[in-house]
Amino acid sequence: MDAYEHITVNSSLEPIGAEVSGVDLSQALSSEVIEEIHAAWLKHHVLFFHDQDMSPQAQVQFSANFGELDQYKFMQSVDETPYVIPIIKEADAKMNFGGGWHTDSSYQAIPPKATVLYAVEVPEEGGDTLFANATAAFEALSDGMKENLLRWQCVFSPKLVHGSSGFYKGKEAEKNLGSSYGGDESFAETEVLHPLIRTHAETGAKSIYCGMAHTVNIDGWSRDDSLPIFRYLTDHLTQDQFVTRFKWRQGSLAMWDNRCVFHYALNDYHGHRRHMHRVTIKGEKPA
Ligand code: SIN
Image (cartoon, rainbow, N blue to C red):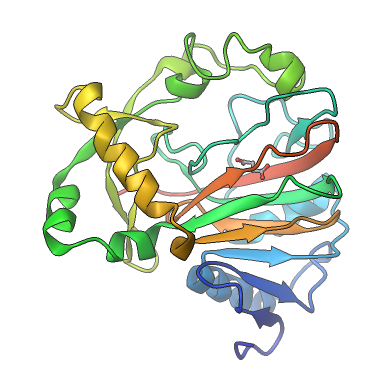
């Protein structure tokens, strides 16, 4: 257990993440509690809370303690607030949302620094989420590799997933991802440049930031030339030594740092319903 005054932090989940208890997130939190949660989050990159009872408004109130809230562009929000999106896989759907390694919305000019995900309904078995430590993965690379990677910028775009020929198209996205899925078709084709290795705005640590879902190519390289680098880094990053597997319970809440964490929603629960609520918190331009 780490030493905190207002919360209990179990950090035995290494290589990434810690479980936090002793706090009711649905209540207004004191600045001391918020500071401790923030410190634990920066240290462990993803925090897990169990047995929480979060309405969409309570999830918004909790998330807003850590920054201005973002609005996701490809999913209609719940009725109660524009900041919470439903992530639902129905029992008869085959495809899930987030079922590949990624950091959230890294194709935005200002991607969200954090995601707060709450489990409304989860299957008894399956539907876990994997989290990978992109800082530890960068640090484990050899110096020569790091020097090269640090020089490169990459083109990021939503088009690989949400574009007119993206992964979600032609797969009955509405049936599989729910009728809330859809959204901004012109934004889906946009591109931005971000560094392949990102320096954390609060800790200064460097992390792998390119991935298979949202990174199109290294700037000035063809996609064919770039893909082996992205594949290598994804394989490297997702080795067991960098990954924690989180088993959700109804009422669990996870808060992760998109600047240094990749995640993957496992799709191994066909025939069962899984229903999550997601909030994202605005970050800064990756540097
Ligand atoms: C996401 O990628 O934001 C969703 C993750 C999950 O449903 O576990």
